[in-house]
Image (cartoon, rainbow, N blue to C red):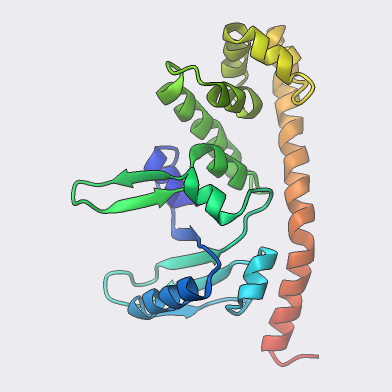
Length: 229
């Protein structure tokens, strides 16, 4: 659901850890713990593994020690900000197979774009590239959901102006949802780039507000683990 998924899609070169979104189910948690034991994975940070904490949006972090995966970090979540429940994400996932018959289940690009809308500046160029990749691979199909995705999520001023030219009716229908499309339609690139930057800052603030109460809980967990009052 994170950097490794971006690598599969061709939107990143490397990622230092593996982020997993898993279905919150008791049997599934047992399977997870079995896998973690095989990887000789130890928890490396707060919070502790607790389904209730995962359901609130916390992530649990592990470091692997088994031969072949030494130092690999694994992050586990069951909930993502502003994204639907796991079963919906699973239904629209992308499945990629390698030459050995191994399959990899990835968040779909539209869902991955939403998941990457974080406070981190490095995530936003990746979002831009993910949308461009999705457009490049699907533009010949002209499906309504694809057009809607490109017009509402594209981060390149040049791509947006091209999209508004190609899809004028769809653009008109989305102006209330994304007003900066009017700037793209008018080919006002300087103003459009400023509006795109403002859009990023607004989304980063939403992410900050989402994580603020969780960060306060994390501080409490750290004090508890240190035995402090």
